[in-house]
Image (tube, rainbow, N blue to C red; front, side, top):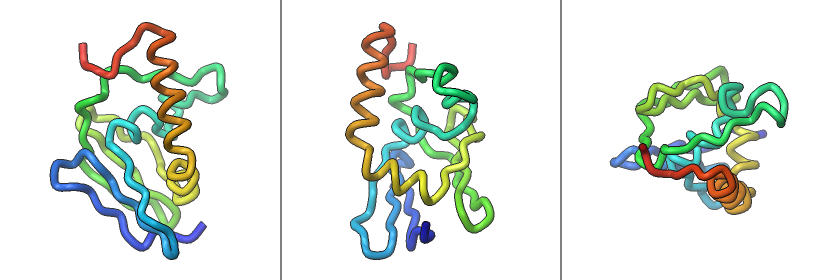
Amino acid sequence: MTAPSELRVSKDRRVLSVSFPGHQPFEFTAELLRVLSPSAEVQGHSPEQRVTVPGKIDVVISKIEPVGNYAVRITFDDFHDTGIFTWDYFHTLGHEKESRWQAYLDELAAKGLSRERR
């Protein structure tokens, strides 16, 4: 996958815009990136180990650091920083954002969890 031409964090640190050459920019909320983090802490080491992360509606992006020439590490204000967001993951997530977000909301509802901090 080609590297993005731009990564831009909004002033309020709640949205990350990722632009790939020849594509419209993908916009990801910090909450979406946090709850769909590609980290083992969230995804587990198998589908059965995946965790539904509640209470992240107010999370913001604290820092973004390059990882080689293929990814970035995003640190959130809840100190989660173990996800390595590859260019491929951003591209896939951008195309599947609506369905993945709805699946997350459905999981929250099924488990009696909330987007709000408790």
